[in-house]
Length: 500
Ligand code: HEM
Image (tube, rainbow, N blue to C red; front, side, top):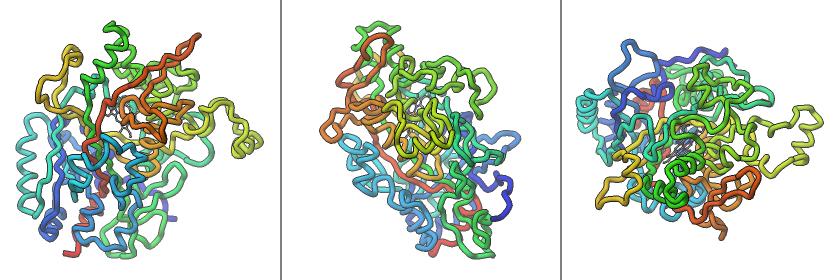
């Protein structure tokens, strides 16, 4: 094993390190490669933004990522292609079984998608970001490079700046893992407490992950290749290092449907309306936590007041779900458990008992342990018009443009991270003691094996839980794809290796 080296930010696309929050104007260009030779030439010098901190900060940024189809179109050899993960090679719509697990059935089924399904998988996405006032010139520079280099624009996914709030009206981008950029974290052993600090290899290929292992990725024996060395395989060059997988999912939001349903449940009482919406999401609209600050500090939660108010908590302080319901979106998306359920000792005998499957105190202890293996770096952007609180309660005027989230996330293992969260936590009726509901924001409400999936349970202290019935679908998937976002050297290498 080669010695661990510092992270080379110049070899990494910036989205891994930055959300580009100040570059509020953005669009994602979905492209087809028509002339692989011309495309490969452009890719060798394309002005892709790196993760290095720039002074002064950049006014614009470009990120590039490829689907499996795109790499194939470039003529990348099967030896390299086969080194990528099975999920990436199959694609988000590649198997019916995957679509079912992800909840992409019924109204969410790929046959209805605007892109990424049978209507066509793009070869590449070009993600453009800019400060207000700089976007148009940046876009026309990139557009002209692309059109003169054999790319065809399939779709432009526009985004809109809603001021850090997603279309339902909640502050977004609050909880994010702290990436162990300095490579100080030791993954070995069981973690008894929830930590926000997460191994670099969970988000970037070519580095150890939370298991202390290197996630599989393409490596080659070619000492002349201008590629990073593979840390775990002496003599190999690493095509994955400093790259990662990018998931994009276009999710349309029925903002009026969401608020009008909630309004009906509370007889239009404004305070109760907001309370119920906050129970559904699991956070206050301001982004603050529904739980009091935890007595124990959580490694990786920043020291500033906002971070503490918003992220210094675990659900150990709310074992009955009275403050944040078990099925609330954020409690499903990150149940904040350590490797052992609360109160479980790490004594060898007790561990053995647990490994053998005995000693579980409640039905809630199974699916939600070990969240450290299921984290995401979210980089989504909103689209469509922002509705005011009053507008949200009115019926939609004719031809209102759609609004929603271009959900974007980065992870080194699509199956264990994005797909696990989506399938086992968000889209599973059997979660944390619940049995007839899925994520209240994202569920497609299709019955699963004949069981209804359209309730939402709110535990109430001292009495039976309150249960919302016939919760409508508030979101619809409109497109999506799995991409590989390469490191800079790998990008140039793949462009040179294109067999065109
Ligand atoms: C239209 C779709 C969605 C909406 C409106 C939405 C909304 C939100 C909001 C308001 C928060 C709380 C603020 C924050 O921590 O940023 C949140 C957190 C989160 N969401 Fe979503 N979300 C959507 C889709 C998804 C999807 C598809 C996933 C994953 C597959 C996801 C995973 C997460 C995660 C991991 C968190 C952070 C939980 C935590 O660590 O506390 N979300 N979302």
